Image (cartoon, rainbow, N blue to C red):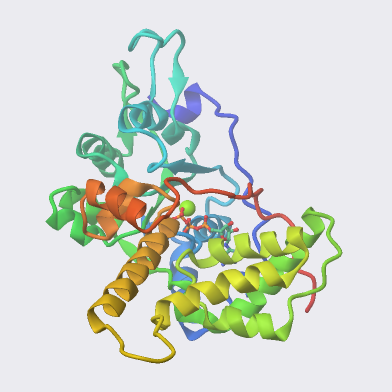
Length: 354
Ligand SMILES: Nc1ncnc2c1ncn2[C@@H]1O[C@H](COP(=O)(O)OP(=O)(O)OP(=O)(O)O)[C@@H](O)[C@H]1O
Ligand SMILES: [Mg+2]
């Protein structure tokens, strides 16, 4: 059954509203290199794998690539594989027929069908379970699939872009990812650098977020000072561009540099300088133990930030058990959950000239 002849799918996600290209790519050598690769791949229809830490802009890049592709006029369909539990993900992706399971009162097309003649963006492909990986492999091999409870094969024409936070080779070695699927999705691979590897791009990104967020929050706060920019350029940004964006949002809303400056300074101080008594003996064991514990707390916090406070994923990244992480979170006096997160809307305001 050809999809185009049987059904029209209304969903088309807009891909405009991306930041301007000079902001997206910046000036750093790492990003210029990335840009060159993207340019070559964007116009083709080969599957593309984007690897990068959380918050480095994998979603932004996927939308950018779609906007430059031969299917740019078609839909861009985003599936956040990490956020949807395994059983739901199958019906979300492939859809179902009426009566396929309890509660399936009507047939429903999945995201794969919605992406026909466009791009299917599988964000967090490393989180998909093995059973679903087999079904995805079939889709990529034959450009066909069937809805849950459906007898017919449905053909689709889609460009697939996948994103992963960790190298899939490690997942294969750990027996969590199928090698045959890996070879299918890894035809072209690009790696997004962490923000700490492109610190020279930070001022321009900060200016972009300043303009955008000031407009959104109707704030009259002044641009950040050169001193603050210097602090920004020294920070390690474990949460990457998302962290910078959130920090700028707090700045624009609070209207003062003090709060965010303290945040950054606390971070740097705790990482580099152990607390030593001004005079008298230094109890090496105690000082070291305390410094190590503080450092551990910072590293855990950064892993939590990088995984959007998903503790299971953070534990995996830190190569410790989930239980050990919970214990260490308590020991470090960290909150059990992310707090004070500011809701964000999609990027939609162009950067003013700076
Ligand atoms: N190159 C960029 N220029 C401007 N803003 C960007 C850029 N990349 C990312 N951002 C902003 O940073 C935030 C994080 O980007 P995005 O969601 O694409 O990251 P991600 O790598 O997909 O993260 P995750 O792995 O957590 O899904 C977004 O709000 C986005 O607007
Ligand atoms: Mg993403």
